[in-house]
Image 1 (cartoon, helix red, strand yellow):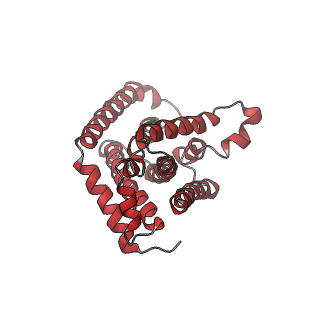
Image 2: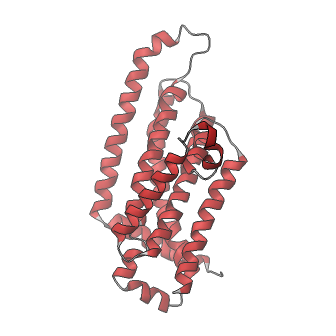
Image 3: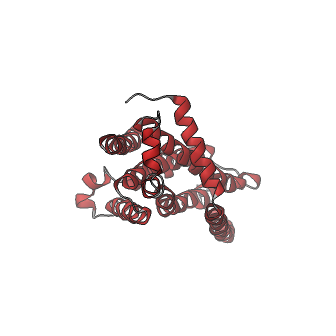
Length: 249
């Protein structure tokens, strides 16, 4: 599974350029920022209305816990629905347009194709996460914030985005229809998300394979090496499955 870092970055750059060249990308980004801003302002307004009552408590929760943490959780849900829309075209569209054959006939390995496409979309998603996080961090302009909790949430979202991207990339490699890849990815992600809500009696085993459950630790301000290892193994597993699928064709 050898690869050239230069070629990986070339493919990643190509993916980024193609994403920003599509009008639909800008429409999705505009809608995302608008919806996220409305949610943020609504949450902030609710916090300001109860702020006077909170000051009467011995240890009142701050804006970070009441406003920022739920907003990061909402962003995680948005990413669950958004990422399959972008991953569906990574390989399925190349196969449908017959350009995947050209890529594989060029002096480019399957490893470089997979890692390049994964990296290109991950960089794009990282920009989305950072811009939304900067909106949340404007809380620091008017109130003390817990930067540790904020940074852990950003790290958790980046790991979550990487795992969702790897899963979506694999489903994109399985089909020639991007829509099928998107629907399959959303179905599996929702299924894994629902596993975290199963009854406590049988939830331990299900929680272990649920990305949503592992993100909750970061969302609550807890750094657990088990969660970090899960996201890394989850992403690597589906990247390897995608590489294996392309290599065997």
